Length: 625
Image (cartoon, one colour):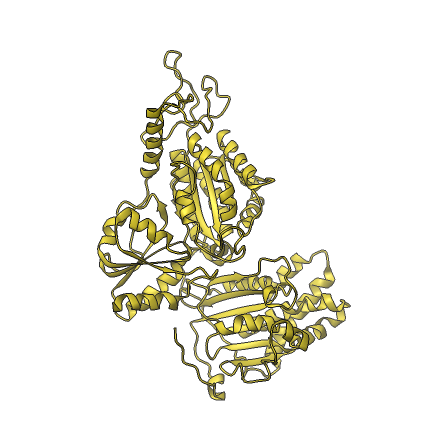
């Protein structure tokens, strides 16, 4: 992708162009509090009524060597007065707290963008750690961008001096000074941040006062230092929104709330068995704070124990839930087969990350689709759902609970590191608009002449759900093949064939909605087919292409397995099918296998989300052929 750049004139740098959206990236050392800074700026932006999307990007190490490129932590937010569906291709503003943060992020800044650098951290030692031979703030290597240098470190020390903090503790306040400046730049209120600081440091009043002083000092610097020519103040109007109650939500939060809502609609308590793993751990953290909604959480000693406890809870009459990422899902594989064989409801959440093995623990990827659809020994079919955004994860969690309980089957819900950690506004739904799907346990046994058949089937091919200890309904479950009706152990070839066919037919018969075209027409030259977190960049790329008159549509899948029944007809109505995904073409292969269509891949496995421009360019290449 080629870009043209030129050196900015002073007039261009000072030009105040009305903005509909702006992308800001905070970047610094992993100990500089960039995730906290970005999170609080997100809060202020949401309260201002702007639409937004965020992208936290941080290292896997708990604390990488200070000042090195390995330890750079960044938080990007795209916000504005229009619909925002991605965290933005390229930042308009980069706030770099040290040389390493500048080096890692500057090439992604748009030409003409603004760099605000903490010159106090650009000493010889930090420059060497970042791999700079010369100070980039003093040569012409940054000529493509506007550069403003501020000694944020010293300004912070000056601001918090009256509170008697040590030098190390005082410098920890510089993220608040930076946040104060950012709040001034975009005309944000400080009061919500001040209230949050009072709550966070309630047991340390001196830290409350110091951080508020740093916040106010950064804001005052913007007001009084006459830097308006270098750092213009922008005001973005609120984004249009339907009336209602809104909050910001991450994917992990939305899944947790959705699981609770789904369990309430089913009339079940939740048991969550989990083991900490990035980026899935946040679901355990959020659910542990929802005990008043009949939620029990259990941190197990390992992944196998976590899913085993969840299966046991389902057997006992609760909604069993477990969560992990790719490596942990691999460890849970045999137990997933046990849940399929015993035909118990279970929700399995896979927050995907870069792989294989330990891979990229804090980076995003979509490389577990094969694992979700096929990754168990034997023929072990399982419904698979994929969330497309943080807010969408709420409804996906409810759908996973519905399928699991109505069809007596484990269900896998796919998210990824981007969805799990990113935040966006969410309109809190009216739960009266959701149709309940109450569970009916079998409470009474048949008469003595017939006997109880635990693998008898209803119209959905689901077997009855019986709480252990129910009089007259004693039965055997386990991982060895069962007789088609009695549930007794049965090795007969014809029985195994019949049970394998029944399990496959049950999953294939799961009722999923017909697939809709997300944007565009139902037939044409090109359809861009996506799943998961590629929704935002695909949708924006297709929208831009259509605005230029290109014949392209967007279809986005929620139900990965079974696929919507009308999908074959939809796809066959287009001359070309392009499938962007953050793996080496897994959905493409699935679509080719199921529908015998010439789906073409657009793949990316860098640990970073797709850019809109990357998909837009692929659309143009495909149509030009």
